[in-house]
Length: 100
Image (cartoon, rainbow, N blue to C red; front, side, top):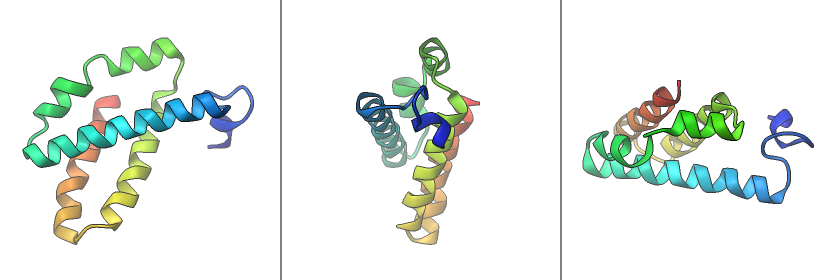
């Protein structure tokens, strides 16, 4: 989204872009934990406690974070078999749903 990476946007500049990429790496790791465990418990216990409050306090638009995770899902499931994509997709959707 151009409004996020343009001057004045939440992800404008190298430092803020790096911060956003770090967050996406974090969510991808959480989703991987869920897939390996076969359960959303690791995602809930490790990574989603207070996420909305944190982003709100930082002025980070939560819908943009959720959209970034949706985009990661789209790429990730494209690399998997249909069966694996369905399983992995569930965990991406769980994280996105937790942000709503």
